[in-house]
Length: 112
Image 1 (cartoon, rainbow, N blue to C red):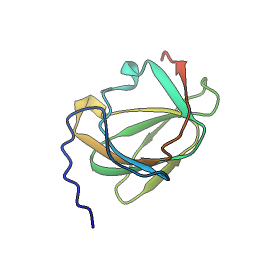
Image 2 (cartoon, rainbow, N blue to C red):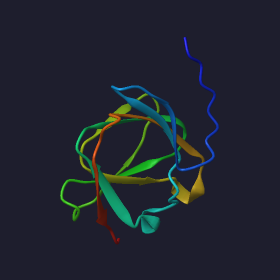
Image 3 (cartoon, rainbow, N blue to C red):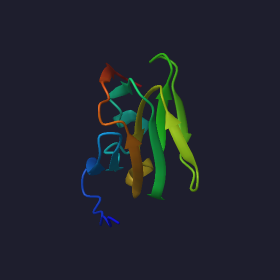
């Protein structure tokens, strides 16, 4: 068994990785939709799970039409589209993210 202590102090912290998957702790740096400057998209799905606080996912299938989804406790979100996130009004917000270790990422400039 491996026990990992987490200290969410930065935006993205990989806490465990194998050849099949990577686990990270994610604390969005944005505090509103107006802070979001870019969207990212990976070539493989990403799993998000809200650990604590409030996080709103910013999602788009085409980079034009935006959907804001407030994460709910005890729900898993599989994200395949363009995305970013924010913590409303700077609230505490921590998510567990599981992804493939060999993902390729594209970035798209975003302005709200």
